[in-house]
Image (tube, rainbow, N blue to C red; front, side):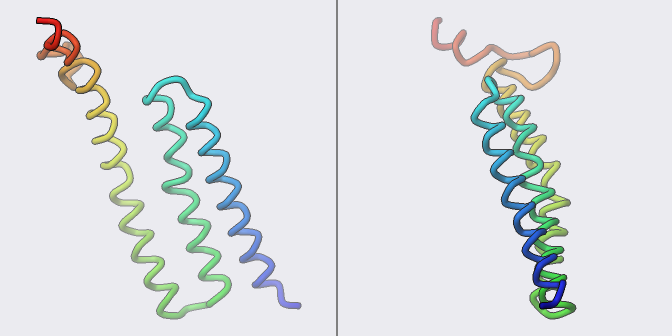
Length: 112
């Protein structure tokens, strides 16, 4: 038996374990800010492991290239998506994303 399929399966297994651990972290954490920290490994590290597994299993093929392109866009877009999500959470809670807060919180607007 060749080592490449075994190594590929190990990488895929690590990706699955990482996603399961991230999901458990999201379930356990009390607020959205802390939950967002546990999304990052599942959204960034697991796809890297899957892309490596594809590269090990298939070699340099069209599928590997497409996986690398998809991974590139995920790595580039991930921090922007996390930042936008964090800002949206803050706007929903505080009414404004800036530290001093310039607006009213949505609950304060409903009470008036």
